[in-house]
Length: 416
Image (tube, rainbow, N blue to C red; front, side, top):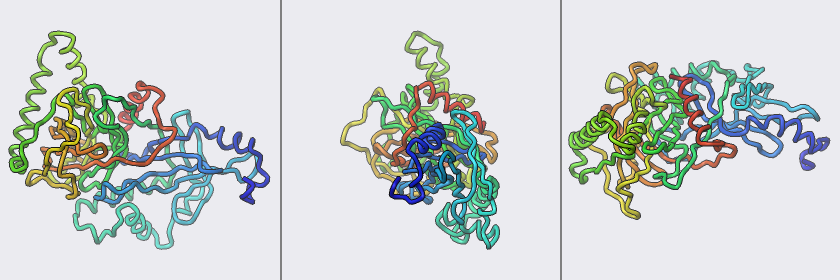
């Protein structure tokens, strides 16, 4: 504190009382209410500041690149007994802002000088700047007309908030020694929608991927993929795997098996337990559903995937099975792993624009390694690759498994 001239007159007690203690409830991870798009905000103590960092996926389709982040607000003491809130949005430096703590797990921000967000070149310059930051390219570089429309739509929708947002707390998923891989946040490819952030969590005999960021087809908060850990899929050899019809046949056979098991009457405690844990896979129970933004299959998109903890057929340590995408399956990133550990039957959610006519469709969950997995959407003939977010987040653990489950329900209900 004595190194910084502006803080020579400060007392440690002032910093604690007026800054750290007063704003303690906003530390941690948050999801902004930005319609279907969502987001990931991390509020941290940084020296004598409290800063809200918005975390952004890397530029499409580089899913293995590190996350990007930019400051949205900061709080610090400009004078004794009074904390100053500054909006960091835009390109003209910090300016006056306001934070209201609605309740323990919700707060809102407001910019009091939104003219600082404007650029001299008007909306066109603002859009070009946003496009370079969001996508790392210009509109002329994007030849796909549907993708151009989605990008323009997102800019118009998100820019109207002017950093006046409401945030709701989210927790990182609890882990268990039996989990197939460590749960957490992942970046995934979603067709024309670009890269999105999902949260992988384990729930008994199922795993789920919940969207933290979303799009107009499958909004943030919805369950993008669900993995049935009780139904492992044995892929054919590489040559036969190149045949999409062969893979489709295998997956549809497993789907039929799952349906028959769900229709069987309960015959004992084990059967009853299996039925009760499978029931959440029904569409009305799915909490997170994505959309990929692919210009195929009636403009319906996939989303919602998870990881698995297999109780049977454990992975053989140190060994991997050769993997290649079937001919005709599209992928935003051709640099996917060529070996995998294991595969499971799963379902992904696809929907029309505006989350219309949502439908859970069959697919294949592919575990590549501890930090990467994939999902093949059969109906869309599309492949999504997911890579772990390597950033470390403090104040983000759920106080209990029940609190985490309740959080998932809450963020899903906001966009259902």
